Image (tube, rainbow, N blue to C red; front, side, top):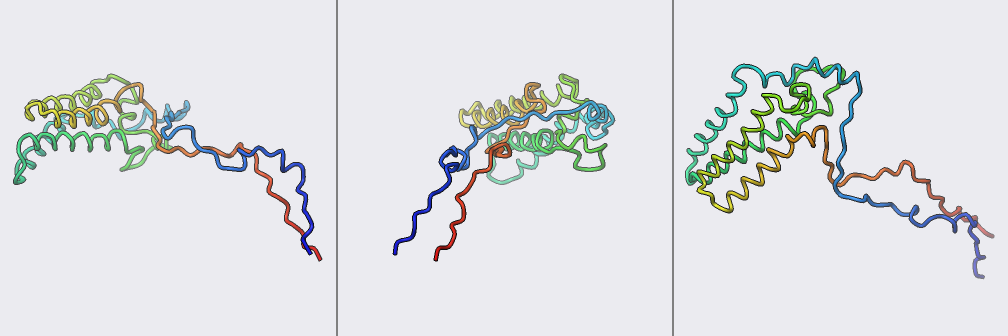
Length: 208
Protein backbone atom coordinates (compact mmCIF):
# COMPACT_ATOMS: atom_id res chain seq x y z
CA UNK A 1 0.00 0.00 0.00
CA UNK A 2 1.53 3.31 -1.08
CA UNK A 3 1.51 6.22 1.41
CA UNK A 4 -1.02 8.96 0.76
CA UNK A 5 0.10 12.12 -0.94
CA UNK A 6 0.64 15.01 1.44
CA UNK A 7 -0.17 18.42 0.04
CA UNK A 8 1.83 21.28 1.52
CA UNK A 9 0.13 24.58 2.29
CA UNK A 10 0.08 27.19 -0.44
CA UNK A 11 2.08 29.60 1.71
CA UNK A 12 5.21 27.50 1.22
CA UNK A 13 5.14 27.98 -2.53
CA UNK A 14 5.11 31.77 -2.15
CA UNK A 15 8.32 31.89 -0.09
CA UNK A 16 11.18 33.60 -1.82
CA UNK A 17 13.88 30.97 -2.47
CA UNK A 18 16.56 33.54 -1.62
CA UNK A 19 15.28 33.70 1.95
CA UNK A 20 15.59 29.95 2.37
CA UNK A 21 19.36 30.05 1.89
CA UNK A 22 21.96 32.11 3.72
CA UNK A 23 23.01 35.19 1.84
CA UNK A 24 26.56 36.37 1.39
CA UNK A 25 28.18 39.69 2.08
CA UNK A 26 28.54 41.97 -0.91
CA UNK A 27 32.22 42.59 -0.16
CA UNK A 28 35.03 40.95 1.76
CA UNK A 29 36.25 44.37 2.97
CA UNK A 30 34.08 46.79 4.91
CA UNK A 31 34.98 50.27 6.19
CA UNK A 32 33.21 51.33 9.38
CA UNK A 33 33.34 54.67 11.15
CA UNK A 34 33.69 54.82 14.91
CA UNK A 35 31.11 57.33 16.08
CA UNK A 36 31.00 59.46 19.20
CA UNK A 37 28.49 61.51 21.15
CA UNK A 38 28.78 64.78 23.02
CA UNK A 39 29.41 63.14 26.40
CA UNK A 40 32.20 60.96 25.05
CA UNK A 41 33.85 63.91 23.33
CA UNK A 42 33.78 65.85 26.60
CA UNK A 43 35.24 62.97 28.60
CA UNK A 44 37.99 62.35 26.06
CA UNK A 45 39.52 65.75 26.76
CA UNK A 46 40.52 64.51 30.22
CA UNK A 47 42.75 61.66 29.01
CA UNK A 48 46.35 61.33 30.18
CA UNK A 49 47.00 58.20 28.12
CA UNK A 50 48.56 59.90 25.10
CA UNK A 51 49.89 63.14 26.53
CA UNK A 52 53.36 61.63 26.95
CA UNK A 53 54.05 62.29 23.26
CA UNK A 54 54.25 66.01 24.11
CA UNK A 55 56.60 65.61 27.08
CA UNK A 56 60.22 66.74 26.97
CA UNK A 57 62.42 64.02 25.53
CA UNK A 58 59.51 62.04 24.07
CA UNK A 59 60.48 62.98 20.53
CA UNK A 60 64.04 61.81 21.16
CA UNK A 61 62.90 58.29 22.02
CA UNK A 62 62.27 57.36 18.38
CA UNK A 63 65.74 58.09 16.92
CA UNK A 64 67.37 56.56 20.02
CA UNK A 65 65.38 53.33 19.59
CA UNK A 66 66.24 53.25 15.90
CA UNK A 67 69.94 53.67 16.68
CA UNK A 68 69.85 50.99 19.39
CA UNK A 69 68.07 48.61 17.04
CA UNK A 70 70.61 49.27 14.30
CA UNK A 71 73.54 48.59 16.65
CA UNK A 72 71.93 45.39 17.92
CA UNK A 73 71.16 44.03 14.45
CA UNK A 74 74.70 44.83 13.28
CA UNK A 75 76.02 42.45 15.94
CA UNK A 76 74.19 39.51 14.33
CA UNK A 77 76.65 37.50 12.21
CA UNK A 78 75.94 37.39 8.49
CA UNK A 79 73.78 40.52 8.36
CA UNK A 80 75.11 43.13 5.91
CA UNK A 81 74.30 46.83 5.92
CA UNK A 82 71.57 46.58 3.29
CA UNK A 83 69.68 43.91 5.20
CA UNK A 84 70.33 45.61 8.53
CA UNK A 85 68.73 48.90 7.48
CA UNK A 86 65.77 47.05 5.97
CA UNK A 87 65.17 45.10 9.19
CA UNK A 88 65.37 48.28 11.28
CA UNK A 89 62.88 50.01 8.98
CA UNK A 90 60.41 47.11 8.99
CA UNK A 91 60.65 46.61 12.77
CA UNK A 92 60.05 50.29 13.50
CA UNK A 93 57.08 50.48 11.14
CA UNK A 94 55.56 47.30 12.56
CA UNK A 95 55.91 48.25 16.22
CA UNK A 96 54.77 51.83 15.66
CA UNK A 97 51.72 50.61 13.73
CA UNK A 98 50.74 48.21 16.52
CA UNK A 99 51.26 50.87 19.18
CA UNK A 100 49.62 53.85 17.51
CA UNK A 101 47.10 52.38 15.06
CA UNK A 102 46.16 48.85 16.10
CA UNK A 103 45.70 48.69 19.87
CA UNK A 104 42.55 50.49 21.03
CA UNK A 105 41.56 51.79 24.42
CA UNK A 106 44.00 52.27 27.28
CA UNK A 107 46.07 49.10 27.77
CA UNK A 108 47.51 50.29 31.10
CA UNK A 109 45.72 52.26 33.78
CA UNK A 110 42.11 53.35 33.95
CA UNK A 111 39.92 55.35 31.62
CA UNK A 112 36.81 57.45 31.97
CA UNK A 113 33.53 55.63 31.31
CA UNK A 114 35.15 53.49 28.62
CA UNK A 115 35.14 56.37 26.12
CA UNK A 116 38.47 55.21 24.66
CA UNK A 117 37.51 51.60 24.03
CA UNK A 118 37.20 52.15 20.27
CA UNK A 119 39.98 54.72 19.81
CA UNK A 120 43.59 54.04 18.89
CA UNK A 121 46.41 55.98 20.53
CA UNK A 122 46.84 58.04 17.35
CA UNK A 123 43.19 59.10 17.61
CA UNK A 124 43.68 59.97 21.29
CA UNK A 125 46.74 62.17 20.74
CA UNK A 126 45.87 65.88 21.17
CA UNK A 127 42.18 64.94 21.51
CA UNK A 128 42.07 63.84 17.88
CA UNK A 129 43.28 67.14 16.41
CA UNK A 130 45.11 66.88 13.10
CA UNK A 131 48.48 68.35 12.09
CA UNK A 132 49.66 69.04 15.63
CA UNK A 133 53.44 69.27 16.25
CA UNK A 134 53.52 65.81 17.85
CA UNK A 135 51.66 64.21 14.95
CA UNK A 136 53.86 65.97 12.40
CA UNK A 137 56.94 64.57 14.15
CA UNK A 138 55.48 61.06 14.28
CA UNK A 139 54.53 61.39 10.61
CA UNK A 140 58.04 62.45 9.57
CA UNK A 141 59.94 59.80 11.53
CA UNK A 142 59.03 56.77 9.34
CA UNK A 143 59.61 58.83 6.19
CA UNK A 144 63.05 59.87 7.40
CA UNK A 145 63.94 56.29 8.31
CA UNK A 146 62.75 55.15 4.88
CA UNK A 147 65.03 57.67 3.17
CA UNK A 148 67.97 56.50 5.26
CA UNK A 149 67.27 52.84 4.53
CA UNK A 150 66.89 53.60 0.82
CA UNK A 151 70.24 55.41 0.76
CA UNK A 152 72.17 52.74 2.66
CA UNK A 153 70.63 49.90 0.66
CA UNK A 154 72.07 51.58 -2.45
CA UNK A 155 68.63 51.87 -4.05
CA UNK A 156 68.29 48.13 -4.51
CA UNK A 157 64.98 47.64 -6.41
CA UNK A 158 63.77 44.71 -4.30
CA UNK A 159 64.64 46.25 -0.94
CA UNK A 160 63.27 49.60 -2.12
CA UNK A 161 59.94 47.98 -3.00
CA UNK A 162 59.74 46.23 0.38
CA UNK A 163 60.58 49.37 2.35
CA UNK A 164 58.29 51.61 0.31
CA UNK A 165 55.32 49.25 0.59
CA UNK A 166 55.77 48.96 4.34
CA UNK A 167 56.05 52.74 4.64
CA UNK A 168 52.83 53.40 2.76
CA UNK A 169 50.75 50.64 4.38
CA UNK A 170 52.02 50.86 7.97
CA UNK A 171 53.47 54.35 8.30
CA UNK A 172 51.56 56.79 6.10
CA UNK A 173 48.03 55.63 5.32
CA UNK A 174 46.92 55.02 8.93
CA UNK A 175 47.97 58.57 9.85
CA UNK A 176 45.96 60.35 7.13
CA UNK A 177 42.98 62.44 8.29
CA UNK A 178 40.77 60.60 5.79
CA UNK A 179 41.18 57.41 7.84
CA UNK A 180 40.51 59.05 11.20
CA UNK A 181 38.09 56.84 13.18
CA UNK A 182 37.80 54.47 10.22
CA UNK A 183 38.05 50.70 10.69
CA UNK A 184 38.69 48.25 7.87
CA UNK A 185 36.95 44.93 8.53
CA UNK A 186 37.90 41.83 6.58
CA UNK A 187 35.18 39.27 5.84
CA UNK A 188 32.35 41.26 7.49
CA UNK A 189 29.37 39.28 8.66
CA UNK A 190 26.05 40.12 7.09
CA UNK A 191 23.23 41.12 9.39
CA UNK A 192 20.25 38.80 9.08
CA UNK A 193 18.27 40.31 11.94
CA UNK A 194 15.80 42.01 9.57
CA UNK A 195 15.27 38.98 7.34
CA UNK A 196 11.97 37.18 7.78
CA UNK A 197 12.12 33.76 9.38
CA UNK A 198 11.55 31.06 6.76
CA UNK A 199 8.58 28.79 7.30
CA UNK A 200 9.43 25.12 7.19
CA UNK A 201 7.13 22.33 6.06
CA UNK A 202 4.64 21.05 8.61
CA UNK A 203 5.46 17.95 10.59
CA UNK A 204 3.78 15.02 8.81
CA UNK A 205 1.24 13.10 10.81
CA UNK A 206 1.34 9.36 11.23
CA UNK A 207 -1.18 7.39 9.25
CA UNK A 208 -2.69 4.09 10.20
